[in-house]
Image 1: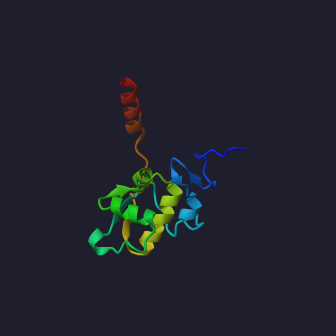
Image 2: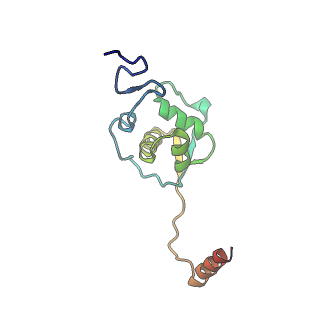
Image 3: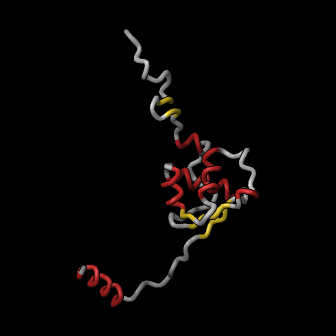
Length: 127
């Protein structure tokens, strides 16, 4: 039987994509962040000149680089191409180290008036 030279030597290596790392390996097996992060929470990282990136994982570094400007948790997950749960755990690490701040959206306790909701629905139907 002739071995295919394009076949990876290990299951964790993809010839086209390179090494494949499972999400639980990125988070060290943790599945819950120390604090909760809303999907639309805004994250802002400490300035790059104030952070020593060398001891951080590549994913942590990427978050700090992307979050130099305000960015939502959902946008971070999209740009990093990582599952939302993984990004939340990584953000929890950075928050605990004081490297990012999180600004949660305000939660309203009042429900909009029925007349306003009906007007919105009627406006959408008119489109």
